[in-house]
Image (tube, rainbow, N blue to C red):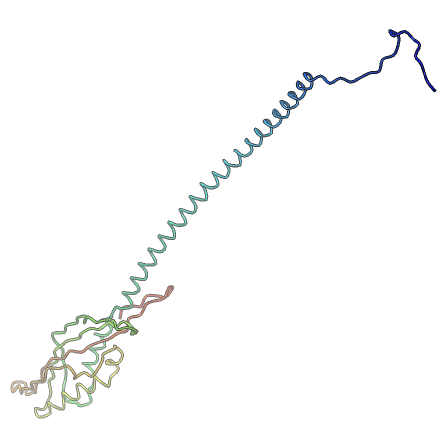
Length: 232
């Protein structure tokens, strides 16, 4: 079927046609971009403030941790210094020879009983000195000292001076004093001979001479927590 519009042209209903306006489109696009940019700026500014706050907190935490780490390292260094001093002191204590008890036992030995009766012994010119030693590979350190002194034996019978001197050395060698205090070899290994003489005034035979005894101690290092030894 064919429809014909017989109305005059001015009364005819015109079809609505959409026409794009480039100027308005560009303006709308510009506004949209500006709004998006403004929103993005506001978001970034908020994130920046948050990040700056977090950064400030982290920097403060870093400074605190750095100060704590520095204090810890200083404490460790101080502890290491004290431990080295402790090791040095305990090392010296481990190498030290104590003489108080040794001399006390020595005096008791001289005033004690001898295997051969009839004589007494006195000491004079006692000299104690260190003997330098070299460390041997694989061997423990040794501390060695010289115990040099002169003895005087006063006996009742002139012809028994040899018996007196033999009894003197044998009693010391077999007694506790010699082994307890680390003396080595035998008591008569380093003596300069005896010179007996008869004293008519007191009717006694006198035998005098000198000996050089050596005392040896193995140096030991004291472990942490151990109590220092008492001087003896």
